[in-house]
Image (cartoon, rainbow over the protein chains, first blue to last red):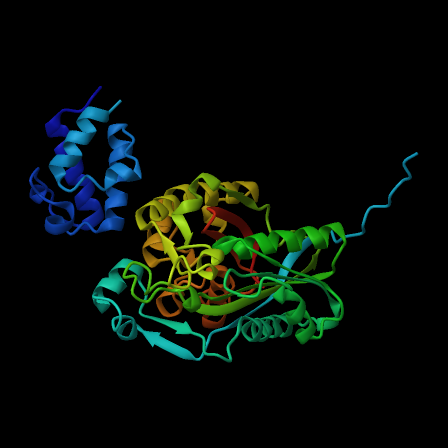
Length: 82
Length: 334
């Protein structure tokens, strides 16, 4: 069953917390992964792979570049999840 | 009619008998890299885990570094050079296409008239060479084989490319492979993914430079995120396959010696594989950088020298790089 927007944000917050050590409550839609959450380009790959597994979605490398904010990722996952 | 052809008389199995390395004398700190790019020591360390690397000088040629490393490996194995039946050299940074540098190295080692040739398998070159060596020994076409990984990647580095200038380095690592009663080199899991050929490689082919269509000598470039994803998640699968092919689990390992591409890849691979605490992990990259085909034997030598691993230990080695190509196997350390 497809995850809701709230579930996706909560899931991403847990993933970012696990990978970058950022408190989950700081992971909100308007935050930039790189500038606000200390997720560098390599950590972003780890976040993406974890999100793929959690939300049953494929996020190709070419699309990863467009996921600047948590909101971008939420929109992507919402429209692509299986 | 077809006559009966006799099979070669090889050994029941093969193993690594000795290892040796050569690290160039010049140690290059991140401060030197920062003379050419707008970055910081902290940034380089956090993205790669590299603090220093070795760069070769004019005298530390591919040939000289190889002879030094292979000489040490032969001494470590206790094998005299004239017993060597083949010399296999993996390199992408020897700028003389023919003859193979392996022939000169074999001659310099005093190895008589062994088979000698170069291979091009980038950062998987050591595993490719090891697999060829094992085959020759078991099939019977060589008793002892010297496998060398050697690079002068500083010659292929664009010092102004802030995504790669801090990564690449120089050095040579060699092993002597010989006959054994029990397997000391497990089945190799190897392969290539040519659909991803464009993710790591030269900026331009040599002929583009010759024809003057580009001003700069070719350098190495890569798509960092794509390579990272493949190196961690796809290579974790390959590593598990190599363990399974050897009939072992991660619990049976004493050491993990991945290609020293980037500390972040090593850390993520260890995490993804869920390696037990007791498995020693090679992290030679901190002071050696990425030396492509040389990195696994160099890291192996260092682990044995420092006591992180011991002779007879069971280690998983995995190389991966431009091609994309990969090779993994479980080995008994010399």
